[in-house]
Length: 212
Image 1 (cartoon, rainbow, N blue to C red):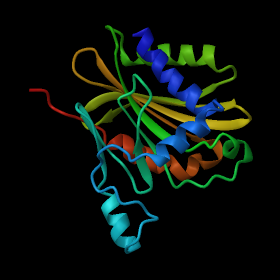
Image 2: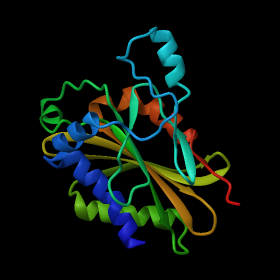
Image 3: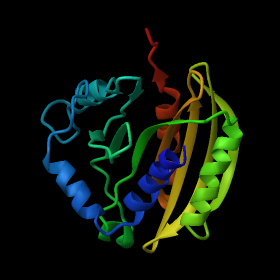
Image 4: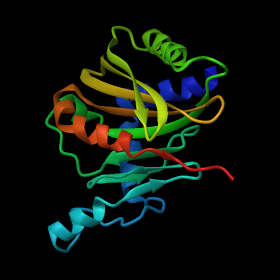
């Protein structure tokens, strides 16, 4: 389990703060994304209302789950060890430090196992590793919730990297047995209010597929 949690932490630390992120996103934006239903983007030709209507039906579909992909969000190749990832492709940020690393708000989905731990204990393990990796990180709003009849636990956190103030939301959704799916969101503290409902809607759309 430690290796999987390390992947979750790496997604946050590397994508939020590494200078190489500008190369990562520019490379992804130049390449076609993987198959996503109704992939029209807002800057394509056509009626805006029609495009937005189509985008509202987008889903990021994987072997074991599906999750909504709101208008303006684009599937991208996830880091190794991560099941899926999407970025706010058309995002325009005013923060100079965020612009310098070409940061885009994103969410990622990762699979792990609890190895017999409760969700509360599992989340605490993630938080402990985040504290070790990101000095000064501040946690808030930890609570239990339910996602499409699945038990889940969520928390928020604030931290600073490369001069950028970030805000993250992480939600661990319990699957069958020891299976757990971690949905992580990262944006700027200054844009959190703008994306808070979008993140909530994305989490609420997460559905695990029935295994035969």
